[in-house]
Image 1 (cartoon, rainbow, N blue to C red):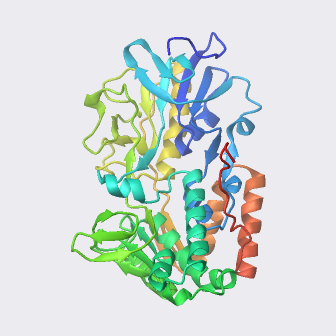
Image 2 (cartoon, rainbow, N blue to C red):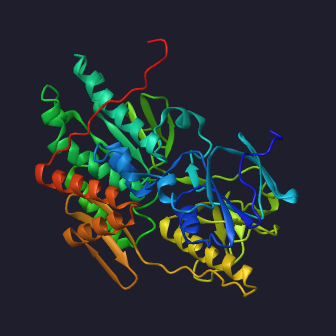
Image 3 (cartoon, rainbow, N blue to C red):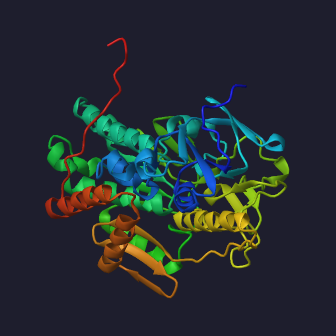
Amino acid sequence: MDTFANIPETTKKRVVIIGVGFAGLSLAKKIDKNIYQVVLIDKNNYHQFQPLFYQVATAGLEPSAISFPLRKVFQKNKDIHIRVCEVTEIIEKENYLLTNIGRINYDYLVVATGADTNYYGNKEIQKNALSMKSVSEALYIRNRVLCNFEEALTTKDLELQKELLNIVVVGGGPTGVEVSGTLAEMKKTVLPKDYPELDFNMMTITLVEAGSHVLGSMSETSSVHAKKFLKQLGVKVLVNTRVSGYDGDILTFVDGNTIRTKTLIWAAGIKAAVITGIPESSIHKSGRILVDAFNKIEGTKNIFALGDVCLMLSDEKFTNGHPQVAQPAMQQGVLLADNLKRSAMNIHWKEFAYKDLGSMATVGRNLAVVELPNFKFHGFFAWLVWMLVHLMSIVGVKNRLFVFINWVWNYISYDQSLRLIIKPKRRDE
């Protein structure tokens, strides 16, 4: 599209931010709007709180509880312009983007597109597995799981019932551990009440990890405790196990073993969401975009990359790049906002130095593991810390309140009332 997008002209320099996840949102909130005009580009008109996608997938939270409208975030900022569209190409040499709403010029461009699900080239798994990289995908998992239970009620074939009830989660990182634990709790406390005609002793929840232990990014101590918690909840944990295929009914492993299941949740990896137009020489073999210590993309003059999509090799403490989690993304966004202000004031820029605040994962009620820089702990207190940190990280006081009320009610009642199957209505109906 050759026409220009309808964005007000200004005498200020324009910063265009592609993607409003943790990195893009942090940058947009901190950037000096008296100096720069900001254009936010995203496929959605809301910010998604990714760490709690699994609670939407397991009917613990409504999608609206962890999503926040971008226009509400910035409604008091008159020089931030939000456009819901998709970028098709970056024309680096001429400082503009091509989008499905027209051409957008920039003085500074920030790529904060995050990461997509990585199927490692397996087209069959990509076609049949369920991923969880957006609120809509999490809602789809909720629908699929509940529909399978409904279908199990309609058949007398016990083998088919078992296949409909069985759930396999591939990937033993925080997402895989958290969704497996939550499903196991649902199996014990919720589903038998909803579906008393079904025998949930037939239902198996299996967590599959290709590595030697779950939570591979955390310490061995945390991994051991997480595995213990999962088994305590009744989750079958398979480590050193690789998946080779899934046709929608049968999950096949490299060693030839199989599991029959109608539900495969794929949480096994991510890949950077790189946009066409980034110089090929700037893309690492891992697929992430190479950046310098200021998050500027190597080989460019005014294009930056933040968060999961970028790879910074200049930090001696993280020679393989920073972890692809929220904290590095947010810290990079805050620093770039400060550096852009420094640029306007002709002051030297600061190099990025990641401050590791720790990592954590929850397995179930009263069960979590937390690693702070100088302290590791697990169990009930870790679970409380996990809840507090995530609650305070959600955008919007109202959203925090809704999430808190849902958590408290769920803790008291061992139940939720969010198990709705919401299907889109076709036009011909």
